[in-house]
Image (cartoon, rainbow, N blue to C red):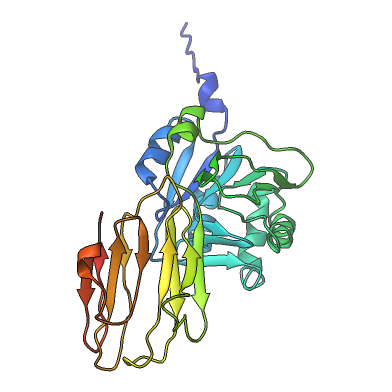
Length: 289
């Protein structure tokens, strides 16, 4: 007589959370290390459509407890792969998002992008919940380390139950020095041609992008002051797609943690940590302090 015992650990029978992390978030390795024992992790490729990648992940990990979307965000928008999902294009992805419902109906979707629930974000999240069938938690505030301290609450919720369990451990929340903000400041037309009254922009924690158009030429000098919040320092400065008709540009970082960009050659280079001049064409510069 033979007796065969087949056993599975109780742990293996309990579904784990599925955690989707965009590769562009700050301190990716720290986030992965913190949650790798508690969830199945999928890293989004920045070169491809994030919605398609998530659809593939849902079909691969069909047996999971909850979905966690860790990416940069802004009011009513999520940066996933090379895609920004927002109110403007959610209808374009409606078929994909509705296909998620067979995996997500009644389950929790935790969205960690900064300020996704702010302003029009509430409508965006309500539509996302309707399409996917999931209970959604997100925040009107910045998530991670902000100028006011650390914040991890997903206080805005859509669905039938209250969601409160973050995938990140208390120790990670207390030590993480990044934020999930997708900041994009666009200035139409001239920036400011008054050196005594420059355009002032305050940076956010994380990656900041500033886009502007100017007339160009030495007769069209522009002035910008970008202020770094207390407790942060500039890591990388990139001047991208800069062009001017034959006149050099100048960029620099002042020693008092204020970055200014005057488009002339009269600035005292000694007051700056680094600078680079351009002729006509396009150039890129990276400064580390």
